[in-house]
Length: 153
Ligand SMILES: CC(C)(COP(=O)(O)OP(=O)(O)OC[C@H]1O[C@@H](n2cnc3c(N)ncnc32)[C@H](O)[C@@H]1OP(=O)(O)O)[C@@H](O)C(=O)NCCC(=O)NCCS
Image (cartoon, rainbow, N blue to C red; front, side, top):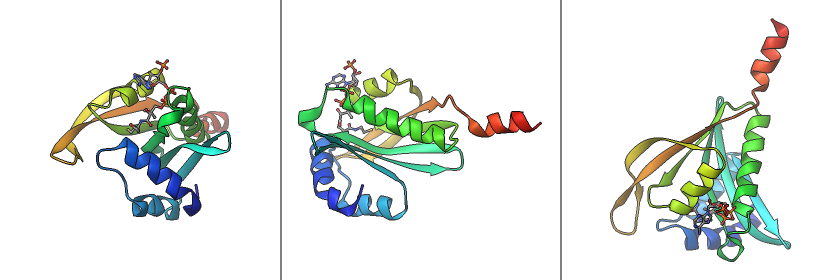
């Protein structure tokens, strides 16, 4: 993802979220060197995902697929890309927050092996009021650090 992609990404974001991220939110992620990924379909931006990493834990901060490209498996594809990247940098798990009413996203995450672990009360701002967040995590399969450690001892 580069600054030039932000117009398309903001269009996806604004049509997806009741309290969308701003351009500055996306710019901050790019400047902080988070894993900021765009997905293309027929040479057009179809989706994006953003993840930060702290120690051995990856945090999926945002993900979205353009409305006209939804239900084609692209959500699964980009989520898997994030998971593969997290495994490649030896993260032990990925976690995320999702609005409790966002059943489509929750279904996607469950399909990809995420489990519900907690609720964060009033986490999300809406146009009017607040909504709880569901916390979901996925334990990652590959653990290269453990693998190397086992080979050394
Ligand atoms: C959630 C989102 C990323 C899914 O993207 P997508 O490309 O449509 O998803 P896929 O086609 O890969 O579908 C994967 C699974 O997601 C779930 N899903 C996706 N759309 C769904 C819908 N309209 N109704 C129910 N389940 C749905 C299903 O489990 C689906 O599997 P299935 O097709 O075997 O039933 C997309 O709807 C989106 O961008 N939503 C707005 C942004 C958002 O909510 N982001 C999550 C923030 S936490």
